[in-house]
Image (cartoon, rainbow, N blue to C red):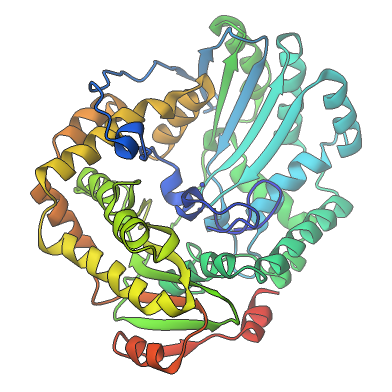
Length: 493
């Protein structure tokens, strides 16, 4: 994955330079499916609400003759039309030695224009119509988003058709994009949390595994316009594409416009994609990136679970109990009760192959040992004894009441539908989501923890100061490897 204007380093993914949030930690693998938010009013203030009765709004679907799946949902509140195109292609499809290709393809698709309208002319045309166009790529998906007035919808869809059939990918725009991304790569070395966020997945998945790699200046420099064209030709095909119209157009008109533009793309099937396997972490090991800082960053964990793991709903409740909000165990014990860390969170993540299980804290140098020990104890306790019935029900109710916020806008509703269809979720997934959450029992939460939180085979990463006493404690976890800033610069730059 590639840092850039739309997505920095790993993110929806692990690393953003200006914003640190839990959302940036969830791999793009897991960000591709709903994970209810917590930290609701009930969790914060002890207020009791009646359970939410909510059914996800419907989305129209149809399939065109060329293989494109078309989605539509009207939205009459404002006179705008949003066109959303989802393509199954991301950093996991980057070839070795050219990591960043998916992100650069999306970026230069937007900035470079097409054979019919070059990048500068495209910018002028968009601005004159008050339209917006963006393209970004994550681990497994590329998204193109167009926002136009209803009277310009046909023109906008024609622009998308040209970008999908005859992109320009000019060398100067490629160089500009690669240069911007390279600056972001250098900047991440300045912030310990950003270093940890980029490094931890590599340590878990392996440097050569696409689920863990990030772009470097060398891989960016190796990418040519011919590479962009080849990636585009392979993945930007009708059979690998989902397209939606959301907004102030009725379904008949939206489908007519879509059929006359993207519906005319050649009927090419989706490419066969061999997703890389994830080897489990075999034994505990410790990594230290020495830094002269006042706050240390702690990371520990290992590979997570698959997207369709049989315990996934118990894992969702486990996540809320462990780190889901102000009443979660990590937050209450580490931050509220002991004041050891301002920022602390964790998650048993799920993904297409395997997500990421991680626990994170930023704490005072002198409190690092205590903080790490407490976090390990909290995780272990969940594997040994089930949470109380009250704790489980609070976590479930918080998740259920937050479920509605995944459908705030028509665009969110349609994007969720596109994602769930692309990754093969059951048709009734959203309809049964709440009932399956409510069916989780405390013992099932413990079983999910015991089956998936392997505290005897952890990757532990400390970015910061480690004195001799703390080093001896870390040695009891596993062998220690130091990674210097010079090594990181040599590998990442």
